[in-house]
Image (cartoon, rainbow, N blue to C red; front, side, top):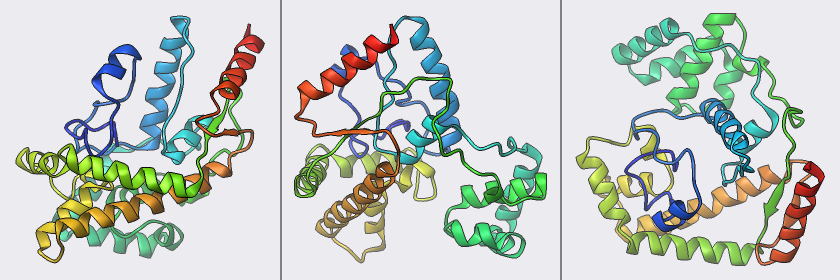
Length: 270
């Protein structure tokens, strides 16, 4: 979510002082109305890794979005590139008959994909229909690689906290987001013309605030819901990361062990 402009508080972007001291990439690169997916992340990250390596630096790929990180680690499936003409036809269908028409079409033509893609995820539904039209195959017939790519050497470090500590930090972070102006940030985004249908506005923190417009919840309800959804998300992400092989798991306070692992990796590379 940190790829989106105008969305600083709700995505907990690193502060300006840290970003001036330590260069960060792929932050503030697209508008909230734009779809940003794992394929685009991998393509952009690969370009950046080459540039950083050419400067004699060590790139660090970090974050909490497990699917994006593992897509870079393993590589992308050999599914076809996008077909602009097919996408345009599907977009026109959605405009004429509503987004529900896309979900209905997918259920008819590819029930396997329809069972795996949420009915509200118009982007993934469109992509599945696009692949089906282009290749005659389900998007899920193109398997994702499950072993690390061999064109890079990886040092995989995972930071793990006890669950009660993690949940306490999540709740404190949500409280801080409200103190730092999350509500004002959402109001600004609405004033700029963005709304619930925009990809960037579907992230945790934003969608709960937007739900207040229905008049069925209070600001306190939204805060509690953000905390709950963040805890659930963290649990899912940790489960995903646990499936990755070869990760050295450490507590963030184990700085000596972290430094030793990094030093050993760098020495082996020279």
